[in-house]
Image 1 (cartoon, rainbow, N blue to C red):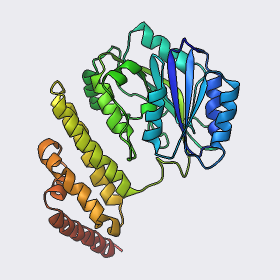
Image 2: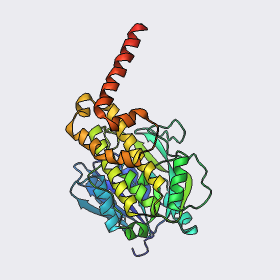
Image 3: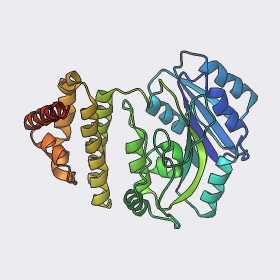
Image 4: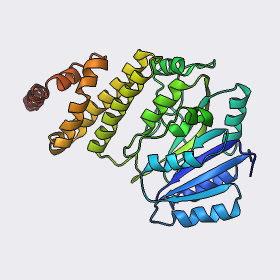
Length: 340
């Protein structure tokens, strides 16, 4: 198939119960000039067998196998194989509307876009209750702000931040592949929440960004998925590395609006602090945890803006913060007893 306009990259790892629904939605796409790159990331269930069946009956489906390396590695392999003018990522346990690719491609071509961002439904596994409201499960994937124009990537990023519309999922962006390749962008491997860093670097280098505020993606929430198992130390590892990489990126790109970089790094530092509060005492005191916070302390001094006094104390003097926090908890307990 020579006339490939869109490459769809589907990383696959142990999603046998959901994969057919995902791939059926790709078979039904109203746009035919697409290639579907199925990257089997060392699945140990029947995911590879299912993928092979779809490859056999669809000439534009390509199955690529690799040893398990995580979501970033699988997506990177897909990018290496992609040939389309535009690229789109779809997780193997989700699916898209039948006309999603056609709508995204047509608008992107009409306005010569580098990136087109769109919305998603969320739903609990086992239901067809697709949500797109402010009380959605697992977060909201609908732009609240007004985006009537075509924006420079940095201009869009600032507008997105001001509207509280920060959606870093790479599955909700449709991107001109040459932008990724010319800037040698790939997902950082070995961390979770890799979308945050990739999305920041990609969006801010785009010249023409627009919004199609229509839910074309169906995001499934299920127990046991990568994004829903909580490993607080791994989360802080990801935020630490992302903050460091963001700092290096903005220092290497002098054209970058420093306020965008400050916001992004502050976001990562806020996440680390919030994650710490959810940890067990053992994990809070773990050497690995302290190492991550010590690594980002210089970034807090250089980039962080905000008025979170507890966070400032946390990074400034960890021992004093722990003492303050223990007194605060003791006071709360005492007040609770006095009110019984």
